[in-house]
Length: 475
Image (cartoon, rainbow, N blue to C red; front, top):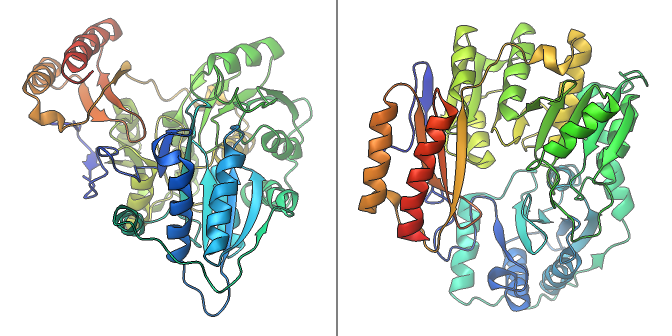
């Protein structure tokens, strides 16, 4: 089955990783770390204790206990998981500092600038509160490599039980405010320069904090720009994270922007690594619009390295075609910011991202960061003296639909004859007038159908028919 359709001017690289199609059956580390239902599977206390010891045993230091930084989002299970992991890490000689509630990119930033041996983020990103997960970062602030994760997975499955260290590890939760404060203080300066107060108090900005990791952090950061900040979904109680709010539910953002006559709105997800925008007229603008606007801004200033933008197989073809007309090439990767970053590092590119709102500006960070993306949009608006609506006018996206089908198992889709035949029929129907991308989610037991074409009702009909076949075979 041809999963990736390309149009003229694009380049697609297939990842060699076995994780490309998502988390394999029973695999511990998926495309974005570990994720499961709380107190089930990989989030049982016994497994977490084993995981913490294995993580610690793979960190090497010269005669002293290496430092680990750990953070979490607002889920009620976060503190429990942090306690278990921190105790396990300390038992094998690690000194553990807690950043408390912080975003995933914030944790990655602190791991790098604090010279920690490893960063541990406890979050399930956009998932509801009954889920949680664990993401690992190296001392460079980058997500842990597949090779290290695979090594740890082999050790866990082999029943390796690291011994307690003669070095005494220490768990400290006394520096939470200091660590979160560093990310709050540094991030605006990194993007906007020393003078961060670039906006008038007449500028209103709505922030949907998803009742997650940015509930307190985002208002503190954006208030430094001088704008009037209107936060919503910023009173986290643990259970309400991502609950009908945040980047997966931008309608609340749109309504608030229109009701308050705000200039722009930003909607984050639970761990703050993605953002969806609303312009002053209430139009929702996703990651494709970020790539379009930022590419034009950077190219004009000679900062778009190799005149290339990195997207994924989900990137709308209208963006690709628009960029090509402007002399900019789009390179596509499999879904996942890890693959986007790999391609950016390989080609030395300035910007890459996904429609979901994961965007990486490599000159500032090697991680998708919703706060950095939002600050970049404000910077561009100020520099160009244009509204988000005006900046977005050059891109008209083709109709696209995504249908998620729950599955009980995840065999190779091309080996299931009814699914393959249905997908092949759709490819023939679309021909050169659209695309079908069929893949498993990297973090959930879902099969995702993406169809792009000229008529939304028609592609919706095609997607629903294919969904029926997949549900019959795998549901």
